Image (cartoon, rainbow, N blue to C red):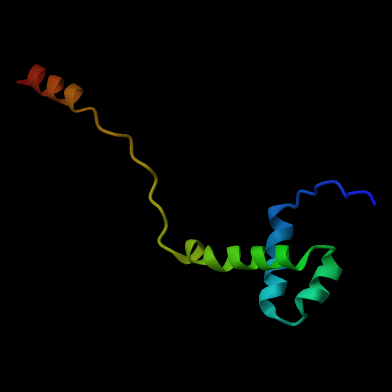
Length: 81
């Protein structure tokens, strides 16, 4: 009995499988045989998608602003005064 080499699935594939699982049209066993995956893997991807879905619809993150260098600003004020 030989082991199958480790497979790395793309994010697109994972999302597609998780969305099909969420629809619930097929059982986990059917999906596992269709996509050649273990049912636990499909459940994990489905859970991850549901847990992180609020990030998609949540408030847009504003671009991070550079921290202000107060010493440089005080020096500039001193030069102007």
